[in-house]
Length: 624
Image (cartoon, rainbow, N blue to C red):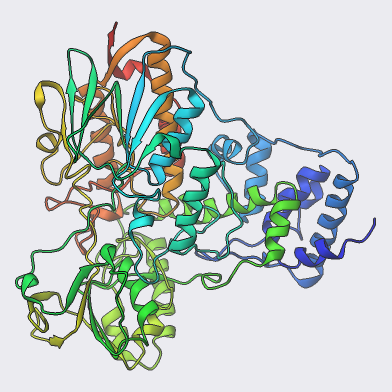
């Protein structure tokens, strides 16, 4: 076979486990299923690029891929262009280096492009139109899929650009904790510059997707929705904007997100501070931290991104931590993605798809079984089962290694609750930042903001020029502060109360016909994975239901109360057996009564099946 030095060099940068199913598909040769070609499983969230292979086996795999790709480019047909069922399960198990349940085959067949996804369409002239609130991840997706289905729609966006939270959150270090190739729409791949995309590139990606699919012409920027009321006489929604305009449509889709409205705790003295005090989501464009003393309130995901990003610029950074977080290592977190990898993604058939499939397994459902409470487990105070306890040992060893020689920091940073009790975070330099002489970790909550700084609830006083509130969002107040009124003028906020939202599939609520919610209650991924996957499930479900409405000539659909009650019962029962109800910690997933409001108890594959198509029998319908 003719040599190709460019491809040969690129293959030196390949993820070897992802190449194995490529070889099987291109050649049909089943020897790649056998030893010595079976990779080891990834440890934790590592990429495992080398697959655990000795050098001679790795070289043999690369050489075989080089020959197979060049043969394909010379005209050789693909031996297995679209594996499904049992064969696809075999290939998934091969790529993942561990058994993969056969129930994943159908979901992955669609995501890998081996089976076409459902493409519901609305008959021409159908009397159905939609208002979408928000042009973030879900809103852009909804606009794309509504256009593909032939549904008339408008997107009302309060900001001046697409992106939602990615447009709003400009704080230093902002980025995803999901691999970039997974935090992408299934139909819109990108040659990412880093394995974990930072804010600017993610926001650029969303703009580029919006442009590529020409959705801007459906978006009205600078248009904030303040209320919406269902008109029973006409079976339409009347949507009010901050400017007093009323926009009417048969269907209302909320795409406002869960991390949308910044939350400032009711700390005494907030208004007395004489320096600059702001939430991470409202980071000032003109802020210069050089030589300042910065106090950061909170030690969750945002703080863990901010502190390493700013450390070294201020004279001092003081972090107030009420509760420590579990932090996992990742072998490629700081590694840029080389041009050679982009070459592979674009040239080697199926490689991009299999690389993404492996990420999906490692970061999605793989950990889910380990989050179930074992009632016989003898150490419930520190973990929920034997595997969860093993995770605890692994993460503890990593923390102790990173903070070696600093027993004071180990004592402060080591959580006393089970791993994954709060969303697992990846180490982006957090431990290294804590070791700095100009960074101090205070294990206290903030009791008071003074004119010149903070006072902790343990008595620690800190002088500060700048206070950064890394205090999260109103995650239980879905759609807030928009006033949503359904049948008989009943308010959605009154039905749910301040922190007890519930909806069938997290999407639809009895008493609110033709209203559909993306990123609704019970749909946040606590066990890992990409929210974009969930958004695609939800939008597919909604568009499928709209297409059914159009075909059946229905003016309204409303989920039956007993359907929502049964779904909520199963949701709550599942959570009662899971980690997030553990009494040893607090998290933003559950409300003051202990009910888990935000997080999904299901595996992603379960939710994919639940939402793959809408069942009209679950709805009360109004015919014309």
